[in-house]
Length: 118
Length: 110
Image 1 (tube, rainbow over the protein chains, first blue to last red):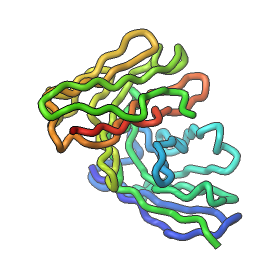
Image 2: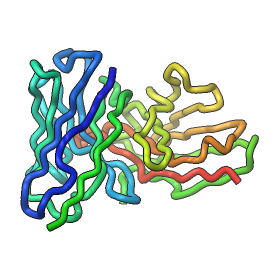
Image 3: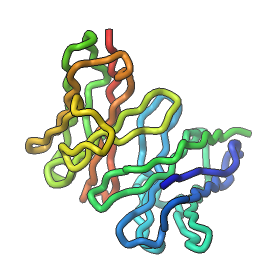
Image 4: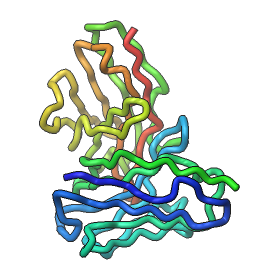
């Protein structure tokens, strides 16, 4: 199983950050797994943004909930992240990952750096 | 400040043993499995320990995990220079309904 993030590396303040994670070697429709987005600001720790279950149920970090949408396109084996009204504080490396039912992220994408700047 | 508390840094000499603690509460570590991740700077985190004390295939038995009450511990024996990395604990929080990570611990092998 491999995961690969893609999307713009530069986003302007107040705009929407949009990223896609493409899954190869497995299905995102399985009821056995969740799929998640995690970010890491430069020099800082990891922060879970949210997770998607069975292509329809979502769980978002309360600190980001008002700005986050995670969705899936099962036909393309992709799930996506939209983060609205971004600011400089949203500058980070964004990872997608598979989450097991025991809340373990066992497979990670390589990450993609997103910079918020005008 | 993270809900899960880890020491910012630990250090030890090659061949020695080190432990990294992760302290939480009943809404997270106290009632849910703990995982540990290793992150070499510039790379994605890598799963080291899951379900408190299990190692994925390919992870050497120099790495071990344990949980007691609302705290968890990662142990590394026979330290190697290649073990220098940042280490994160992670678990579910049933009050926040989100996976939490500790603030991370930087391991230096002197």
